[in-house]
Image (cartoon, rainbow, N blue to C red; front, side):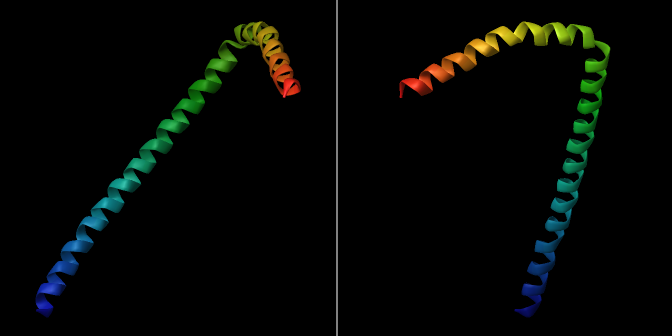
Length: 77
């Protein structure tokens, strides 16, 4: 009976080690993908900075309208 418990314990620990390894590999993969996306984002901002300024300038008007509508909604309550 003790031998069966030992066998069960060793069987239970092996998948945990494999699971930990796969979880670690997934985490490393996610970190690498995150780093690549951040670098690509910075490259896009630097490369198209003049276009980005135009987009920001174009968004100022609708943003101010939205903020004004929110203030009206708050004042009405």
